[in-house]
Length: 102
Picture 1 (tube, rainbow, N blue to C red):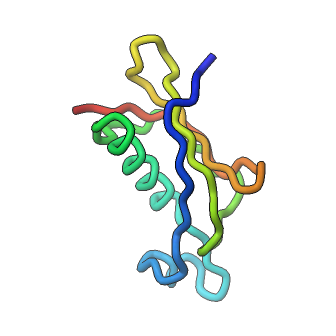
Picture 2: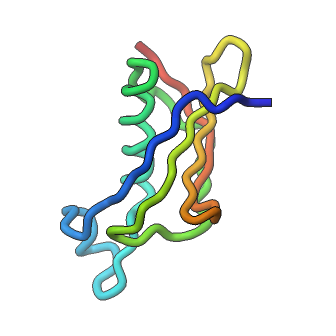
């Protein structure tokens, strides 16, 4: 069982440079931008950089200017792997497992 160690809200503005090409007329926040948010949260929480993505599943879209909740939690006693979940209004948008390094 994992215990939530870090929680933050995120909102990617409609002016983000990655959005115009992903997809014109109906933009979605690209998965790589969500992973960037995971990396930034890992740095804020543990002072680590994201060193490896073991698993990442994107199950529902996040649109520009929507607010989502990002949770990080340790998956093992030694804390080497970190589980992330991103949700909006109780709907899972993305989940996965990453590893941090100093």
